[in-house]
Image (cartoon, rainbow, N blue to C red; front, side, top):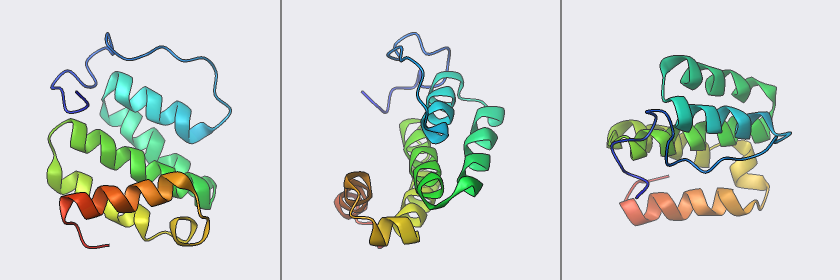
Length: 109
């Protein structure tokens, strides 16, 4: 269950992954694994690298908050992700998924 209370407490149940060239994915993995403020800040910093990084930084920061039971934080970040230029122009699968995620929860985008 993605909403398990153990998210960010050592990642015992987190699938191990190899190197990933996408900085936002490495930072997201670290956030879900460590679950600390430093990992959250690192993923926030990645957003400044470009439009793709901005979208994914917001999306994964929102999903992490949702997994931890912070519905308001999840909503703020995921809705913001859907409003980025990348989400609105790219045709990216995950951008569409973020919109579906919001729609299923009744969050206006």
